[in-house]
Structures are given as C-alpha cells and as structure tokens.
Length: 108
Length: 486
Image 1 (cartoon, chains in turn purple, blue):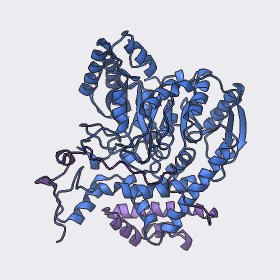
Image 2 (cartoon, rainbow over the protein chains, first blue to last red):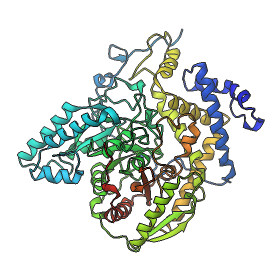
Image 3 (cartoon, chains in turn blue, yellow):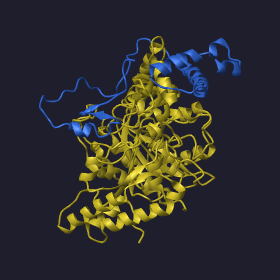
Image 4 (cartoon, rainbow over the protein chains, first blue to last red):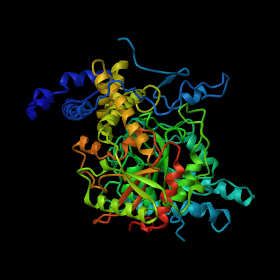
C-alpha cells in the first residue's frame, strides 16, 4: 500500500489497499499500469476519507431518491417502428464478419 | 461586416429580412475561427463544408419564401457529446476516435428543424468529467479572457466559442455544473434546464439521472430562443417529461419588483475568492435596487452535496462507460488474443486518467460490502438536498448563489489534486441532484479582469422565472456587453 507508507496514515485513514484497487479495476475491466495503481489508489483513498463527511448526516428512515422525476414505468405503444439497420449498427465495429460483431476468443 | 458578433436573435432578424445571408454569417464565423483557434483551441473539429452547405440551404429556402424556423441561419457549435448523423463524435475521448454517429440526437434534429447551421464539435473534458476542459483527450482549451487560463468545464469549448465570437450560440451538457461553471469563467450566459425538460436521446451518457443538455448565449434572449428550440417531450427518452413547453421569450420582461430571491447562508464559504464574493454581493444589490426582496435562507445539506454527487455520478458512470470495450464501436487493442485481455487493454489505452479515477471510484462504491455505506447512503442524502430546496422554494421564488467559488484559474495549476478540483463544484452540484433549472450570468469582473458568474435557480419547470430575473439583471447592467480582447 504505497500511499500509506508515504503518508504515515492512521488506521482510520486507510480506506483502500493496493489489493482493493486491483480487485476493483478487475471488476471494471480496466487495465492499469503499476504507476496508475499507486497514484489512483492514493487519490481514491483521499477521496474516500472525504466521503466520510456523509456520516455526519442522520439518514435512517429517509426514503432513497434514485431519480428526481416521479416517473413509474414508461411504456410505449406496442407498434413496430424503424430502428437502425444492421448495416448502420455495424458502421463503427472495429471488426465484423458476416453482418456480426467479431471478437477475440472468449474461452482460451 | 463582422457577422460573427451579433446575437442569435439579431442574426435571425437580419437573415429573415434579407439584409444578410446565412452563408455570409457562416463565413464570418469561419474566418473568426481561423483567426482565434490557434490560441483558443476550442473546436475539436470544424465542419466548414457542412456548415456552408446548411447555410446555403437556409438561404435558398428564404429566397423561395419559406420560413426556415426560429434559428434560421444561426451558426451553432455543439459539444462533442451530441450525436450528429454521419459525423465523427468522440466525447473528448481517444476511445471513441473514428466513431461516426448513426443518428441525430433529438436536440440536434430540433436545431436542424429550427434552421440552425452546425459549425462543428467543441472541446470538453473526456466524457464530461472535469471542471476545466484539461481532461480532454485532445488538448486543453484557452479562456478567451486570458488564454493561459482554463475556460472551465466540462463544456469549456462551448463556452469559449461563444465568448470569442466564433459561434453565435452553442450547446453543452451539465451533470454537476458543466454548463454553468464554464459560462461563469468565460463571461457568457449558460443554462441547465430542469431535468426532463430536454430530451437526452443521442447525448452520450455520463450520469443519466443528472445529465441535462442546455444552451450558451451572448444574452438572455438567445438562451430563451435556444431553450424553445430544444425543449419538449420525446418518446425516445423515457425520462423526458410530458410537460408543455412555454414560449420562453414571453418571460423576457424587465421587471422583478416583488420577486423573492433567497440567498443561502451556506454560500459564503471559506475558500470563496474575494473578487467573487464582492461581485456576487454587488449583484444582489442590483436585484434589490430593482425591487426584488432578498431573503436569507438555509440549505443546510449543501455542504454534503460534493460527496453525495461524486458517489452517485461515478456509480452511474462506471455502469454507463462499461460499453466502451472495443466490441461495438471506437478503438480496439488488436494485439490481445483473448476477449478479457482485449477489454482491459482497450480501456487502459483509450481512457484518460480522470475517467479511470471515476470508473474506479464508481465501481468501488457499488461493490459488495461498500454499497450501503456509500451508494445507498448518498441516495438518502440526495433526498435531503432536494428537501432543502423544496423548503427554500416555499418562501422564495428563486435562489441565487455564486456559480463558482473562483474565477478562471491558470492552466495546469489544479491538476495535481483531483479532490480540490471536485470541491470547486460546490455551488452547482446541488442543482443537478435536485433536478432543478439554473442559469449562470455574468455579474462583473474581479481585479484581474476575469468574469464572475451569478447563478439563479428556480423550482422544477420554472425556467420562466429564471429568464425573467436574468433578463432584468441584463437590461440594467452592462457586463454582458464586454468582450475579451483577442
């Protein structure tokens, strides 16, 4: 945990370890260089310490607000309409074959 | 004649009555672009041919006696986040280089139908993540008032092109202040409409529950005109609101006598620059002298909005940006032999540092074991912040705050500490969390002669109140008439 050594953190200030950074990057399918892991890890730690500010607020019994508009399910009429053509949908494909997106081996 | 200088409503009049042609106006903007872009660098791409061809069509339609719409012949710049059919759109990111949008965003279609001319795409922080446009995957943009300073962000390019008279108006997007803060730093007007007022279809998503498209303008009449052109329910965006669109220009009334304006005690924070506070207080005096009643109010949960926002927005972003994996569009790292390593190395090479930071943070706060402490907690805090505004609007018509605690800062001066950069969004973020409409207008200049922004906030779908207050301020001050020397 390079950022801990660098800054003599107390236990309370340790929010995220190098292992956590690697795990989260893996979940996000995000490749990182060793330098990025160290730098971003330290910064994330600072940000997470700051986020503790939220604990000052009592929120038990408060209804979470995920979305600002009072919308329920919005359904459209069940009618056929024009969408993108297969050709348009494939305009930007890095690789395609026989009208499909082509990807590298899924199972090695 | 410098046809790049007038406002949109002036251009519409001149083009409509045959005094000038849309092609002449467009050529003026293009030559201004040639003149200042080497210094400002606010366009990622300029579509010279496309713009002249759109302008030619407008001129032909006017000659044939048609009315091409409320923005006939107005050259407009679009943030590089809005889809334009057949054009390259990259959201300021290397990962989307070469991406051609297969359809128009709804706002783009509406602007076409209103007779606008598209000049090209403006620079921005990659995926709209930033407050300075320095996170662009291309290059930083200079502030027209001082090109060694940032234009603000993330819609920094769209603010700069209007300030520098390269475009007549422009569109940006605002997730946590990305229209209002660059408008403030560049000394132009910029408005974030109510969440749901404008369709997000074709807007590349950052944080879907917060994103909203809005205009930049040289004056408030242009903001009203643009808002009329782009607003309205859209079946292609299930979060767009089935609410009637008023004729916003009817709100341009020079009278705010009796309007109750709330000023939150919390907005006089430590760290606000002296020049900002001074001009903000002077702005309040302008309102007071015009007959508005200034009321001190409390928004006690605003100090928590930065933490709440950076949890919710990054959580949404980590999910929205999962689609950039080298499969359907954008660049792909072709050297990798397996699907998983292709995903990881494509995203490693394609995303910039700020985007990686936010994806990591968003993934972390959503991950098992941390979800309740961060994400679920923030959803509740979001409710408390909305309650604060609801309470405020029960005693006042609008709320006024500074837009940003600082004026334009030097390029490169704040890149080392992302948390400090996040904290500078303190005045704009609450508005997005509560889904409210808000504008930033120029309320003066600090001692270094940099513009200061004043923000006016109203209840949902009460854009008319904002326009009326902003218009009255503008009619009784001269700040909006000052132009940067370039």
